[in-house]
Every structure is written in structure tokens, then in C-alpha cells.
Image (cartoon, rainbow, N blue to C red):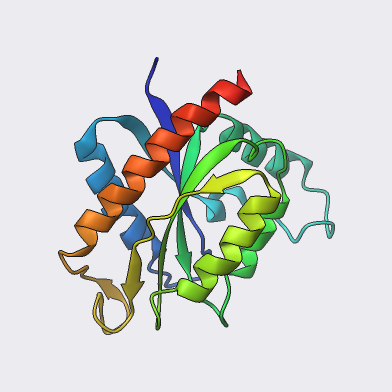
Length: 180
């Protein structure tokens, strides 16, 4: 079987966001494994307007094409008001079939490790027929970020990131059979 394609989805679009730092860290760990093709997928690049507010045929087509090319996902999720960002929810809603029968891992961050956002995301993923894996690296704004803006993860997270990726690869491979 050819290598799986796994998208590392940056779940924030705001100015000054730290998700690109977290995403690059996850990608650097993933790339060392050599078990899949990993790529950063930044929802900001797709400039999706709020669903239903404007004609977004071009953006939605590009977004769905990108998602369809992927076998699994790792979501980089930051907690905003006990949930995911509005931009991520909007991006999730812009696709349906492109998500189906794929696996996802979640790397979250926030004052309580982004746990509440991750739990909200799990419910949404279930509705989209995305199988989310159990291992969940949770990063603290207090101990893994300097001044809340410079990402400096503790070494202990390496084990969880690799464990999550193990599960994403296993589940993505198994679910790919359903999509063929």
C-alpha cells in the first residue's frame, strides 16, 4: 500500500495565532517517522466566508478537493470560550463527504490544555463520520508557551504525539479500505 496522506489542520485564523508553531512541531515529529506523507493544511489559506453568507463555490471546491486528497487528519485546536474557534467550525461545515470514513487525532492547547475544545470537536467529528483516536496531546498555555506566544513544549508531549500518530495511521489505513 502507498503511504497515507495526513493533513495537519491549523484550527485558527486570527492574527497572532500560535497554531502554526504547534502545527510545525507536530509535523517535524511526524516527518521523522517516515510512515506517511504529512502536510500542514491552514484553513486561513482557503478564505471561507461564513457558510451561507456569500457565494463561496471556488473556496469550497478548493477546500473539499484538499480534504478529499487526505486519508486522515491531525487537528491543531485551541480553546476559545470552552470550544473550538468559529473559523474551524465553519471549515468543518463546508465539507461533508470529504470527511467521511477517515481518522483524526487532536492536539489541543489552552488554559486547561484545550480539553474542552477537544471534546466539542469530538462530537462534531462523530457527526461527520470521522473516527477520532483516543491519545490526545494537551498543551498548557502556562507551561508549554512562553508569555503565551512562544511555543516551547515540554519533552513529555513527544510520547503522546507519537502515540496519537500511531493511532491515526492505523485507523486511517483501516478506514481507507472502506473508501475504495
